[in-house]
Length: 145
Image (cartoon, rainbow, N blue to C red):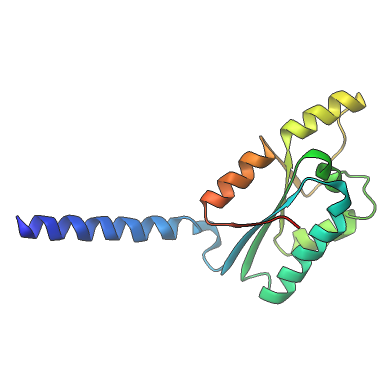
C-alpha cells in the first residue's frame, strides 16, 4: 500500500512538472512572457515604448510580448495610424504579437459604417479581455501602461 501511495505522489509530481513545461511549449527559450493591455487611445506611444524597452532589456529571444488592444485602444492597430505603423512593423519583426479585439472591431464597424482596416501585423482575436485572461492563465504577466 505504501508503494502505491509513493508511486501516486510521484506520478502527480511528474504530471505537474510536465504541464508547467507545456505552458510555454512554443516559446521554450523565452524567460519572460508579458501581455500589454491597451484600451485607451492616449496610451499608444506609452505601450509601444514599454514593449520596445522590454525588448531592449531582455532581448528578442528572451521575452515573448503580446499587445492586446480593445476599446479605443484598438486605434493603435488601424492601418492608417501613421504614428504607430512603423513601430508596429519594427516590434513585430522582433516577435511582438499584436492582437485586436473582434468585439471592439464589430462595434467600431457599426459606428463608422465600414470596417476599419487593421495593420497587416494585427491578428483579430474573439475578445481582447478574454485573450488577456487566457494569456494570464498561461503564465503571462499583465502590464497596463
